[in-house]
Length: 145
Image (cartoon, rainbow, N blue to C red; front, side):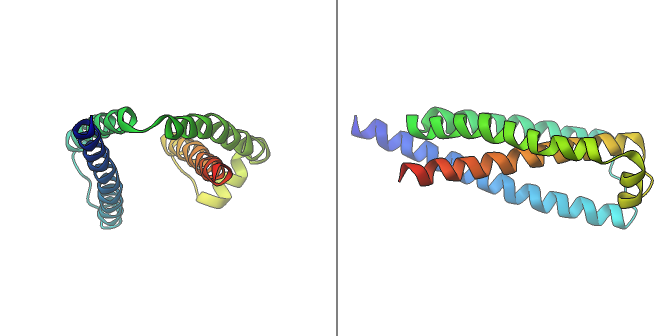
């Protein structure tokens, strides 16, 4: 039994390190992409697609390993935080969507393609959900202490 717990802890530690490393690597990739865009360099679409698909598959696999190895309290915290924090983040963003019209968006960000507006909305929504998740998750653990 003790050996099983040790292997489980080692797998969870490895999954956490891979998730952290992936986040850091993603930050560098994003910064590099922004630098290339500022220099006017465009990467081939198949390369970007392949790299993105590979990253999604690897992170999904690591997330499954992490989820299978955490205890019930951590699972409950993640589930509660994602439901309430993610929903709260979306609801907090809703008034902004109603109050900001096209003219204000163009004044703030300049004229853009429709694809860029969709991407802005997507990133805004995910950011609001992740902020809500993080706040509720931290609150969950502070309340449990």
